[in-house]
Length: 502
Image (cartoon, rainbow, N blue to C red):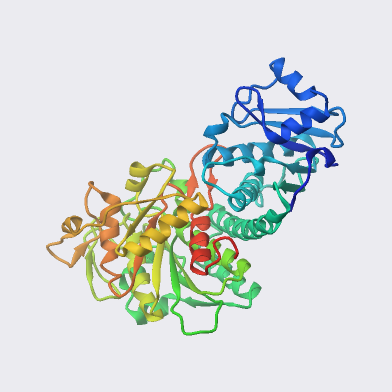
């Protein structure tokens, strides 16, 4: 897919299709008004006849509009002009792209990027349009024997900006969006891969591919023998029931030659989570291949970072593991000794992600990080609390939490902060060990965060629970969302002082 930016009048566009907006009730956008004037009222006459009301998502494709050089004009319903917000804008772009892809228009000039979206500038509108386009065109069909493709797919789209001085802003937005979309596609491809292919070794292989493709990236693999020597008893216990070896991949991106401390991203990489001895219910268990959504997100963010070539230091950790029931599997009642030396009483083997992450979080102390962000499909309680719209955010460091919330608002990849008060720590008390791995039914997301916080005392830390946002469930739309790659990449852009590529 090819993207470009231009500033031009609609009547001068010679293209397969021009895309313009129509608001409720039958109100033409500024660009649509220009086309209507040139066509001597052709468009407004159609609207008066009731062909299009302008409701959000409505589409009307016109052929051979009088006096218009382009072959087609696509009228896109945008709802009420004053109510056009970020969510609606992305939905409109997504539906527009799907419609264009079905019309046989192999190229288009889109004027929707000129619409007024409350509180958003040209950079945001162009970037979101490119990201939404790439998201809408994504498909995971590498394992299908018959691949259905559009006969004449959309191959090129030009986004128009109001003035020539905004062309450089639009170019930066496209460059950023393409890098982020690369990362999102990487995340989706790995997360959607079935668990008989995507195991910890596969994750490690993807990490090595990054280091082969980018000069500023190096990759190191920590295997079970290394973990044994490091005393990572908790991590090893979770993977003990599987024939697939636990492997932790360390991806180092060095974008600047100074003594600055690195940002560290840690992703939970449970390539399949059966629940272990505390076996999950059978319904929907196929989706437990997505329990490595955190690691996929970190891998995708590292890919986007390398594409952007940002002048910062970042280390991405993929904590690969598989949780299976067997005679070797760890059990409820076991007491594990973590790398930190703290002991954990296992109450439920399906609360395994935190047992892998706690050792990974201790391991990254050696990097003397400026900040650590872990990403994990950690708790079903987060889905209950926030649904599929917002990622749960917990942090012991207010400035870091605010940075992430800001990045989530900028990117549209939203997060919501939850409390991490000491009051909740009491729910982890154990009569036999330093703590349990389960805090009970109440406040499950928060007590999971409390557990992890006990292993993060030596640095600034934040936790992203993506259990509700990393994938969509059921039916034809089942699949990875690519979240939170956009949020993490925006966070890194901000850290590098390149919010809009200045």
